[in-house]
Image (cartoon, rainbow, N blue to C red; front, top):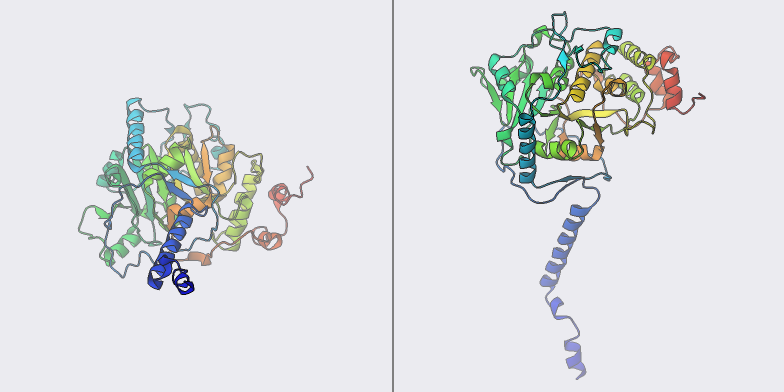
Length: 454
């Protein structure tokens, strides 16, 4: 009897070691999958599966290296997950919005100043630029570039004007980046979303050298992207400033589009652009959606980092720019401002084209031409001073890192490095205010450092 009882003391399930280990492994895998699916570290949730394009949009030669040197993400938590609806629900809703906007006619539009000038943007002085910030009178004409011809082909211009819904825009000048294809596009997206990449001759020559295009063709296309050649000789000597034209004057280059997404060429979109427009613009009921900066909240912090890390060569010019802004009302960020930060990460910008949004883009472009193409320095100044103000959604950095993969540039001009956490006061100030005085920004800096006694 005792021996019989001992025979059945071991559970039947564990009599086979192989079966026992197999079940243990299965439960471990299921637990891990559930944890990573519902963990707070994930910033994006889809309510249901959708129908992505499975085949690659373009086959690159191995020598091109479009996926080399990606920058790893460092965020360990997510406080603001983005919820995506079903793909076909999103697609049909955006199509309905576009149809309604067409049937209702054009909304009030900006009137643009025209004429000829020595520079593409007209190069207006500070007093003239300030006069356009309050747009209470809709009859006033706003300077918004195009005081010179934008040198592209007629066929490209016609194609751009035909894009009347959603456009995704990027640019590579001076062969500074590689062309990367968007991933996880829905099955209908390529038929209804335009993708345009602006390049110069230096970039075009590299693409031809890598056998990605043929110069015998009158138009170029690489995967999703239509390639638009820009003859930059009559524009700006600085390649980054030439990139500012499609970045901030997208509403003028694509006059019939209703929504746009700017994607720096260092990024690769890994989420369908319709999801981004729907979740971050339409559902938020805003005109502009842009990520917060990963480190800085004050404009002056970004200016100091720009000088310290040599992200712009003219440090004296940076000082003049900051003193001009301080003199004309720029204040450090504080909790009374209706925005979570004064500094964006402007590598990804989603816009609904409206009067206020287009005005913001024009005013930004004018400031960038006046000083330098470092748009994070002018962002809060323009945003806080202009009227009417666009509705703005500044989303979490964790979301930005989930919707796009960032890669290093082909070139590192001027010794630029990766900007780290906040700089120490003494070290940061020494580069931007070399004479030891803070000039017209002294009040700003004292307030930023919590030492103001006003």
